Length: 116
Image 1: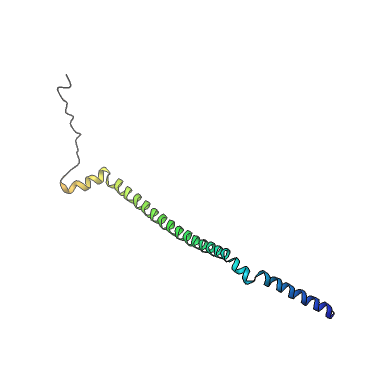
Image 2: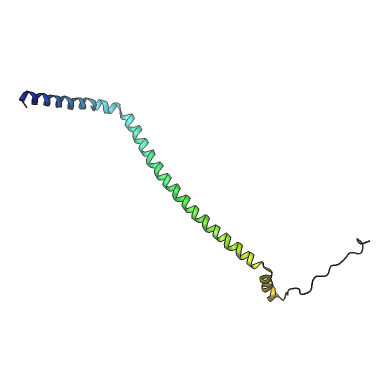
């Protein structure tokens, strides 16, 4: 490469740097401050939205676990009530009070006034 070509390349490189300096001058930066502030606000909102979504997901999972536990408790209590309401279990439960199961069928009383 000759010196002329090198000088030409250096001159082009300097021109390119000057072009970038012209684009990013103080005047340009000051002129675009509202846009930078807008981008900053968007970034803050984006971050907040991510945190809010994570928090909501954690709450949904917590409530879901709680719901499962309550569902299991409901099923357990329901089966216990059904077991205790069986005739044999009721007889065992009232035996200490002196109540006994009927051995003979009940007598049906008839009203003499309505049978006429």
